[in-house]
Length: 328
Image 1 (cartoon, rainbow, N blue to C red):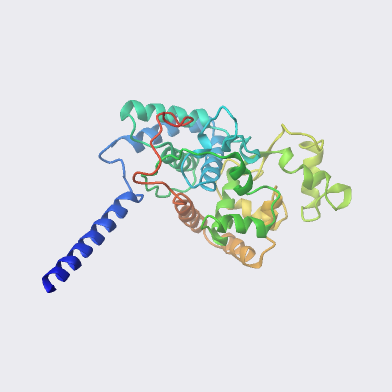
Image 2 (cartoon, rainbow, N blue to C red; image 1 turned 90 degrees about the horizontal axis):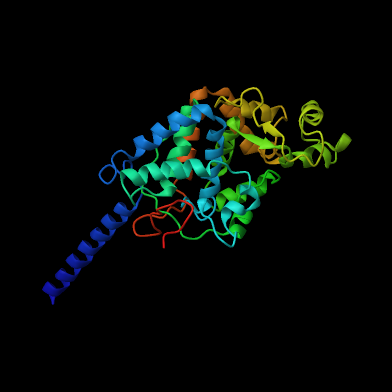
């Protein structure tokens, strides 16, 4: 009996160790493709360096795509999927202005030519976002890889989970918390707006249909609002005019976005909302009184954390052959 008990204990211990090893192998890791596709990350970086300098606004687009992907079903490239029904994430209201799908598909084709069926579209989004920001002078952050692609994309989930430009602080924090992200992450990831662009439709409510004089949102600097109405968003129905989210500094990844927030010149209601919470406001002031490198370092940590949200690894999901289509 004693020998049998010892054997059972050994078996349990061995099984437990194997389970831990299997779990560790299934997690994200740096240089995941080192053996299966050793040139993968360099292929992505080279393509980004060749093309992003000619279209630097795409860096902000890829940051947004990365965030919108991770916030719905985790970082699984579900935002890239097409469907004959049209009921997919990319057709949700917050995603109608996403750009760069063809860019991602071109990167995927290069990787498929190098090593078919190996590199996931989910990893491509994260790598392209990082490399695009880096190419435009922003911070570097580690991108552990090994994500797998999801097979489900749901328009309703995207509409419900992606933060809106019109959300208040409580709603924003709730949506972030639902994905394991905290207040600090909310403030830092919003800092990506430093290279962002938007359209008048996202701010027209603050300019034309609010409680202040002339319909202007009283939480927005009146001179800034009047300038937008006079020179950019000349009608409440304008849905084509492009706006810089960080005027005068949109092509530079820096902390000026936070300075604008304190001047009540954040473009979105959701930008202004960051100053309505005392803890958030204190962190904004800390960012502004610290070195620019502090923001870069903290932003990098938040991006790496976001890139781990609800990832699929191991045998979950699949490696799509084309990013817009689930494999047959």
